[in-house]
Length: 62
Image 1: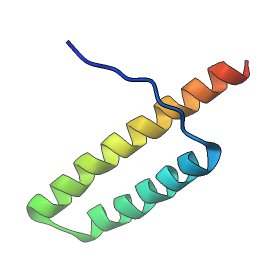
Image 2 (image 1 turned 90 degrees about the vertical axis):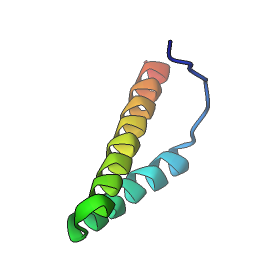
Image 3 (image 1 turned 60 degrees about the vertical axis):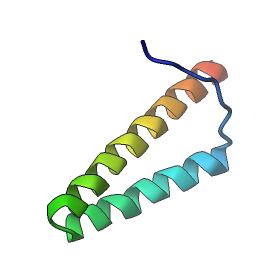
Image 4 (image 1 turned 120 degrees about the vertical axis):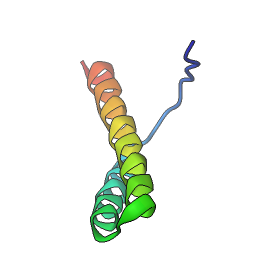
């Protein structure tokens, strides 16, 4: 069973997360081995969180 929590993310916080994801993606491409895999996994999590926040924001604005 997956546990979920409701949080609020401001537009500025979401923008910061998106920029962090871009930086992390560039870092992942510059690394190799386990470090690259770990950064890639972190990137996937950041992108997923940003996507869910975008969807929640769109639903709230509708």
